[in-house]
Image 1 (cartoon, rainbow, N blue to C red):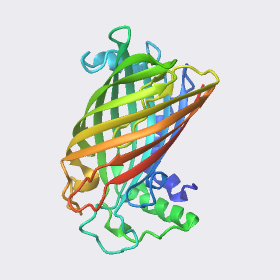
Image 2 (cartoon, rainbow, N blue to C red):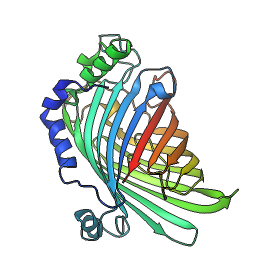
Image 3 (cartoon, rainbow, N blue to C red):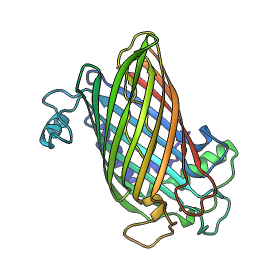
Image 4 (spheres, rainbow, N blue to C red):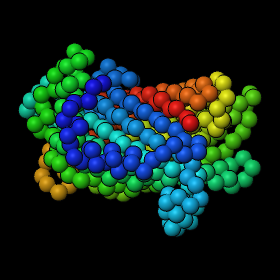
Length: 330
């Protein structure tokens, strides 16, 4: 996809990109990841969470790095030390199902474009010989609104692909800053099965901010070659699921179920600091996902598909989202 030239002139997107990339050099055990999330990868629909792109740089921080000092400054019940750290740049697009209707569709979710940058800290703490506690801590800063250029990007992509022209972006959410903090903890029990690693365990999580505020609980399973965690999809941030080693062909299968008590979702509730279109959000939302990861030496590709229960009153059916993630390790 060719990004519109306006993106290169947008000062906020440019500043987020520079802030994330300027301090980076290839560190030990580093990796670059590109992730696409799209409803078209899981169904024929084109609406609601319709598109997401993420660039992610992860690495093992040195003992004297600022990310390690940040982890040490936090209370130990949150995180002990940073085994891995990551920076990411994310762009997401949300629309109602009928994008050819220029008038406001009050019964469907708002048009919204998000762009934000984030920093993540990861810890894997062994508890016993076969039980590991994994902690993910994420801080995201960005904006929602026209400055995300979501309308221009979707129009250009649909023009190139010959898809329906979106006509309702005049009704999108207004510009507004975003700040969100997310904590997720997973317990993994490792058991050999048919010569491979079978790992499973529960997870809990929480998010606080003007993008999402929620509490979550879930359960995940993974079978195949050794890896750290499983891939996650929006609203769960992060870049778990990397193979532990880089040796020839590797693979694993995975599946997860997650339940959310959603106290706030800006993409449904609308702008916080100004009046806007909104819908009546459902407080309880459920996700079920499954997928496959393949690796060859320093390369890895994951595919995941997620089914999500109805998120707001009047929603006609559940949503399906697919994702493809490509990772190169250095």
